[in-house]
Image (cartoon, rainbow, N blue to C red; front, side, top):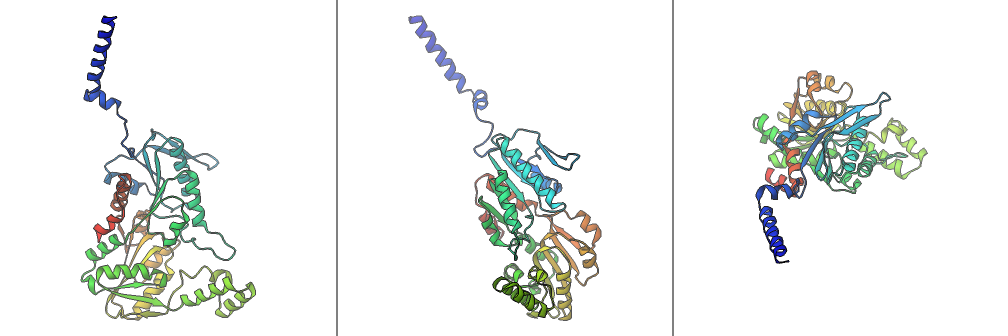
Length: 383
């Protein structure tokens, strides 16, 4: 019995010694940090941006296979373990937007069912963001997208310059709306000589807050194009408050179809420039460029007001239809957008188009979220 007791004591001593060995201790330790490994998955919408974000984070893109069956159903397979990891899925709402959305939902759900610790959707351009207000007898598709993201299994969303700030209320998960204004301000400082003498212009009241912020940062003057959009705003109010017959009558006087007038309050154009733009470089600022028409009309108005040079800056460049050809033929001298949406093909169609890289900002946001650091301080440092 004494020999057995001594043997047990020796075994306990050996086990305790081995337990302190670095190699064995590392083998026993979990392979993930408290927050899990960073796994970056690239959707089909903007693979180049995904690669650049991963490069800034000094990680490799994680492996996933996205394909379609013969009947055009989307098929997704995660080709590596994500158990306990933080999965960040980069997908922008462009190109075939409905396919891109469905692909994103399946990627999120695949990571969730594969036991990822956190599944974060990185949506540089949020799909259906222009449809974030309810029209008469209409839906709110942007709210529907937010709901579907939650149902798919997303735990957090990172996006850039939402079309309306109120859209953050659509979500039941945390949303980080990354600002692109520091990138636009830096671009102006680097490319516009004597930028403090330029005039930052908002094409309508909806773009005024963003333009005024940039003007303040640059210590430049601010101008607003005003006029025509008030008629559409009045029409929209009448439609919501009055009957269908009263709405039709009011819009008939205005010369517009009642169904069209309700959707034109954002893209309508003004007739008056409030502010001095004579012999100055004017910079039109907005969050999104879809069609060219409202911007070309705004530029023509500025030219008639004797503006010297006209630039157009925006976060997202959709350039639907013949927008690029229209811009090429317009009096706008330069257009700059970020690469939240792929711009390689767009640049081949328009010599005026320049691209601002936003990957570093998105990567830094991912890093801070992964390490549970403040994202607000990112803007304080930029300012």
